[in-house]
Image (tube, rainbow, N blue to C red; front, top):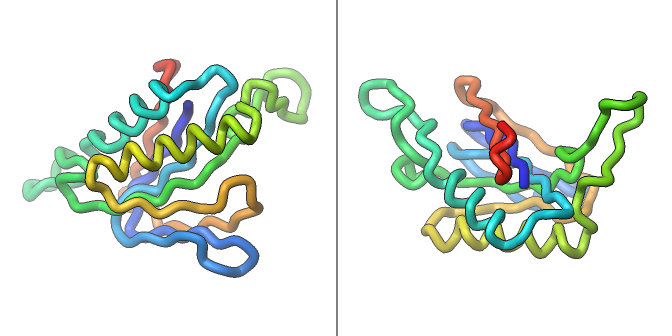
Length: 149
């Protein structure tokens, strides 16, 4: 699994002009699922996401997690995180999970975050979405369950 995590002042995802999910201060997570991922990857990445100390403490240092900061999380599926553009100009998405498998692991990731007591909003899986955000910092972190980066 791969995640692009952005610390935001606000974020919103819309489908067909209707808001599917919105948050105030917190994290926007763009989540991709590979064909080799399993439930352990979802749990690991959710744990890492929840524990990331990227919120400022009283001294201004990034030392607080989403739970510490009472941050909300918006999770948006994004299979294009597994796009491979090393050859040619059209990305290949062969490493991405099939939609049925990806949807199940996406839901598992979201549930793992909720099980930690976090408030989580979502987009709509496999829909054309418009994502709006205000990146705070800016702070953007890349996570990969296989620890490639």
